[in-house]
Each structure stands twice: as C-alpha cells, then as structure tokens.
Amino acid sequence: MKRILFILFLCCIGSGLAACQDEDHTVPTLPSGNDPEINDPVVEFYDWEKNRTELLTSTDMVLLYGGGHHRTPYTWDKERVSSYIRYVDTDNQSHWLFDSFLFLEIMDTGTGGANKMFAKGYNLESANQADWTKLIDYYFQSETGIGALDASVKEASAILGTPRQKRQIVISIPEPIVYQHPEQASSSTKYWGKLITRRLTFPTLPTELKPANGISIRYVPSSMKKNYQHVELAGFYWLAEKATDTRDILNAVAIYLNKLKYSFNWIPYYGADGYNQWKSLGFNYAYFQPNYFFNESVPDSRLEDACQKALTYDMHMELEFDDNALNSRGKAYRLKNYECIQKHGIWEKNALPIIREVHPYLH
Image (cartoon, rainbow, N blue to C red; front, side, top):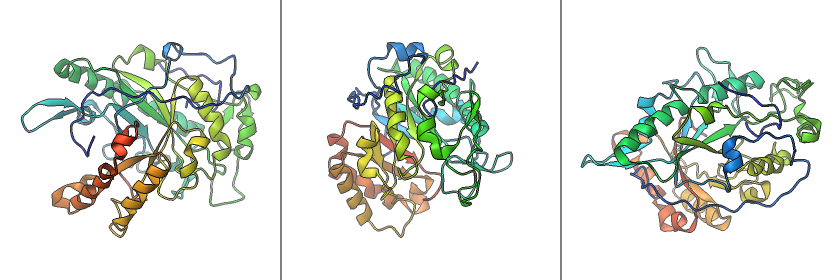
C-alpha cells in the first residue's frame, strides 16, 4: 500500500556491457549546505532514512525507461529485468551485472497515454500532479517495476549468493515546467495541481518550496519498506538535462534529499547549461552525455572532447547505446569508440559509477 506524504515538494519525489563484479563502493562526501528553512522539524523519516549514516553509491548503473504508453513492451516484468541483474557467460558461469537501476520516463504518449511530457522539449502538454502520481505508481508495483526487480535479485542470490549490498533504486523527479503549454507564453502556470490547500504557480516555485509555507511534496511508498527485501531506495535523478529553467530550486532540493541521505543525480547533455557547475548546483553525482552513438554525423572528436571536459570538471561519463550496437546492425564501431573513456583513465580516476544507457530516443 502506497503512502503519499505531503511535506516537502519535489523531494521525494568496468567496461561496456560485460559482467560486473559485486564490488566495494566508495562513499561520497555530503555537500555543504544548511538552509534553516529546509530543515523542517515536521519531516517524518522512514526507518531506512533514520538508520542510514551516509549516502549510498554504486559501481554499475543502468537506465530503465518506462511509464510511457509508447514503450513496447510497456511493463518491466521479472523476465525482462532479470537480464540486467545476472549475466551468464559463454562458459555458462553466472555473474552479477548492474547493481543500481535508474527508473525514468520523459513522456507518456501512445494508445492509453496522457500525451504529456515530464521534461521540456517534446512539444506536448506538461505533466501535472495526476501524471506524476501515475508514474510513481507505475514504478512501485509488486509484480512489475521495482517489485519484479526485487524478485529477480532474490532468484539471482540463490545462484550467486547474497550480494555485498542490496541492489539500489534511483527514481527520477520530473521537471517542474512553468507553463502548461510551454510553446504558448499565455499558457496557464497553475495547471499542476494543489498541495495542501494551495495551487502551485510554477514561476514563484522557489518561494513556494519553503517548508515554512508547507508547499512541498515528498512521496515514497511505504511498500518500499514492507515488501521489498533485496533492493533499497538510494537516490533521485533530476530529469531536466540543463539547469536553465530550474537552477533556482536545485540547491533546495539537494539539501533536502541529502538530509534524508539520498543522493542527487544528474546527466546533462553535451553543452548543456550548467554542466560544468554541477557541484555548486547541489548534485552529488554528474554523468556527462557525449551524445555520440546515436547520430553518425557526430564526429569521433566529440568523444575526445567530452572526455577532456569530464576530466576538467570532475565528472563521470555516460555510455550510450541501443541494439544498433550489434555487429549486424552496423553501428558497433561507434560503441567501440567509447574506449576513450578507459584510455583517459576516467573509470579509474573517478570513484563514481558508470551509467550504461540503452537509449530509446534520439537527442
């Protein structure tokens, strides 16, 4: 049974695809920040929040897109998700694969969909409170989504033994988009829904975020504690891939999440506004998108430049690919070119996990 707790808004809400060992994890340092207005005394902590002493980190994270009706298949059942948890090599030996799973969605279109977007840039109506709630319900199911992941880890543990730590869950926070129809300057800014007794107006969101005003939302299903035995909620991901429209609220979100010992994650695209300011924006982990694999007109020099930027700004790198990376599809060479990440020692120099992305759309 899912509990929705209206307390503080927005805040609750190595190489290639090879077998990964169940590795030790380097714990990050919590960023500074002590905004008294964020330290709301009425926050109700869950047991895992009370008992956690530090942020969690992982070694190998993968992005799992889901929640939009345009996805085929629509659900993440146990059979589908199991191949991301355990890898069987050519000698029929089993290995742990990914140890962290980022659940996210960018839009909901297709038959049965709401025709809404969870981040700007897709020429759709902005998702509202009902859409956000529907998305979180989609993730926290018993037989699919996180429930299927939990069951699959249990099965893998019977073969591989209990892992050193539970598999980790990272949940995306949709972008709070100012206008209901972003392409229309006259569009409503009060479309999202009500919190407590007030209706949110997104242009004044930074003010309304203050806990003293009671205008925040945090939702974590109580089923995370009651039903899931092999996974744990580790952090949240900011879906907006540039800082332009949300930079004024990022620190407030970061401080609040860190107070509850959740990590704050970001994956800015190549050239995105704020990518080189990720630390001051409040993120614990930032992964740089080269935006190389999917578009063959992007030169190989893009990867070299992205690696240099990642080194300069102490970022990690995202490895991007889809099934076109198979030799039979003709783009295997583009995945191979990501070896530059290893050549520059980014895997060794950064204690952060590598995100492997099976990308369902083009930038």
